Length: 129
Image (cartoon, rainbow, N blue to C red; front, side, top):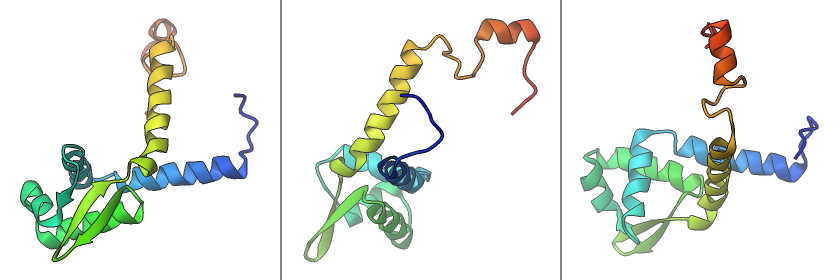
């Protein structure tokens, strides 16, 4: 697809949705919660607190952020809440990361830079960061 510099409203919405999910996952404790939920079909909130070794209030805040982004859903099973991942909400992120991986695998620029390795070596290491 050619980049024309303008994105359609659906592309902008998709970008916003991906950014929201990525932002929600941008903390080691939240990544750990997602990994824990990946290993189970569902998980009780107290079990998450025990597994993470964090204060219950801290885990609750991380779960609130994940829920707000739609990454995690919680179902009340009195007196507890049972949490699980929202596979449907995570699908666009999975597709996006898969596309990046496929591009990396098929690209001659496997170092992730705009210039091939041999060209960069000819001109010396870059000083840009």
